[in-house]
Image (cartoon, rainbow, N blue to C red):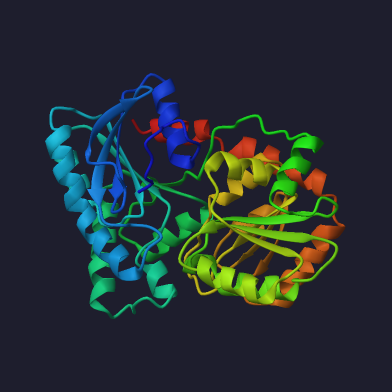
Length: 392
């Protein structure tokens, strides 16, 4: 569901595409051209990756109604585009993710058209339960039953389901007892490493550009700013630390909750908090490399074990993390066991302040190095590639 026109841009999906390409495979990618984009539907090739862009409604960073309608329509839109542009291609591997959950008929038709092909689901989002957790609709609603049937059908069409963490595997098997456990495995988010050291002069230049203090630890939250991230709790934590003089908070990203954050910032005028719109990927990476601690927040209402991909950039840049999530996610416990972070549940500002104080007193450089080594052992794109190819 990620819109991109350049496979060389960094990201968990583009990194994996390039890995397949560099291993000698022929790679076709189908992705959306959302409403408002100037790009039309069509097939192109860039640096050895063939990209089929498909016109859709807005699927991300939009209101619930358009997002829901877009998720329903996207399957038929993708199916029509594949039939038009790729009907003469025979595939050995059909790789897809959630979101969306609405692709079962598309995957089923691709299986029929490509006998012997393996279907592999990278499960990044457990829908519709996440929508129920956030109060978007109830388990007894028509919408839940409709999407739940789609979810179950997609699982049936998948030869293998790769989950982001052990807690995700346990959740899928517990709530879908008809699934053969042998087809569910851990296959987490992953990236390709890029040299990322930043000199002191570069750090000072970047922080000065964005009016961020140079003489104190900088904690950054970067990425989506939507309901799943529990932005209300993030704002409570920022309010409680708004005028500290021993650290500084930076929030940068985009999403439906960003206006609330900006309004709070404009009204409160906190001295220890900066709020910025999303930056181009290159600029964002430079900013993150110049900070000291990564922040991860998830809404406390979740009953599904989410595992945000923003952890990877923090670990790559040798940053320890503060993780505030629901009790179901295993990201916080993994960070603590790995020695590269501290965790609390995202329903207590006092608990967050406690791990914040602990982080400010800790050896953050050593914790950051532990995080980088954990990334090398678990979250490199070659691991994802090898895990998938064992089944092909």
